[in-house]
Picture 1 (cartoon, rainbow, N blue to C red):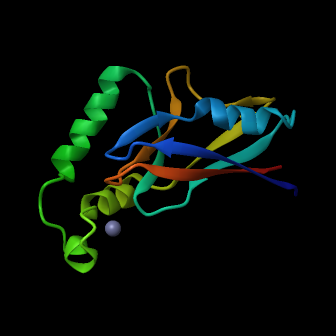
Picture 2: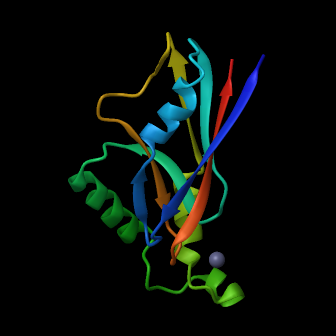
Length: 138
Ligand code: ZN
């Protein structure tokens, strides 16, 4: 078994900023000219997530609004009583959406659907610089 660790940096605006990182992931994987591998895409941080979505304006607003309905900003969170950093909602959103996705590489191609992009979603209440790890195992 061989493990390759790649990473790249993403600057975000925070406030549920949704950024398409598909090209970054493809570049990290395809430069190794592998045929078959497991590819893990992971971001470190407790107010940021990695997920998949069709990167078109309508569904990005739909995701934003759905999160606002389920885990709203502007209400009290116990976390804010602890740290007074005002981002309790961001921690809860990140916990539910998750920190990683996996994509199989088969016959030299990452198995993403035509309308399936990999996105980083930054929930924090300020701009952040995030490091995304791409771990390739074959
Ligand atoms: Zn916090």
